[in-house]
Image (cartoon, rainbow, N blue to C red):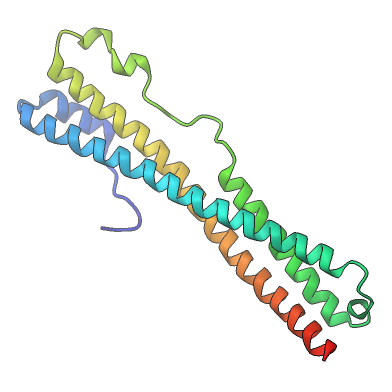
Amino acid sequence: MEDTPKTVDVAALEKQLADLHSDATAEQLFKFGLLLMTEVQQRTGQIDSKLTSTLGWTSAMLAFLILGTLGTKELFGQVWLVLVVLLAIIAATSATLCAFLGLRTQGRWPVPSEIDWFQPSLLGQPERLKRYHILSMLEVRRAHNAFNIRKARLAHSAEICMVMASASTAAVLFVRLIGSL
């Protein structure tokens, strides 16, 4: 298994499926297609869950940073501390933005249409209809996978920014704790 999925030539696959004389092969392709559809939907849920957590943590961190630094005079007496707080705020804002962009509703999540389901020209030909459904599942899965790749990249960026914001926030808290002793 690889990180980058291998793809097939749809035109060549369409021809191969049309020439396929084995109903058992078509059945196996159909079952595996259902498995892959389930996998891509589960991956979407997992990425969305991670993005939701990141959004929550970074939003809270951002609120803590902004509200925790308002009115603190010792902060503004030290230029480097101001810079660390600004770095933390920028990193937390970036993480929040990446998480939001990954979570926002996509314009058009591809789904098989009713025309795909009830392909009029194939209603009397169940095995050809199954082959047509296999191609429909492939098309939808590819589109979902493309959305997941985009979401995963945004989740990765959000995680990196969250770590930077956390480290900067920890440094500020440490300095403030040491200063209060």
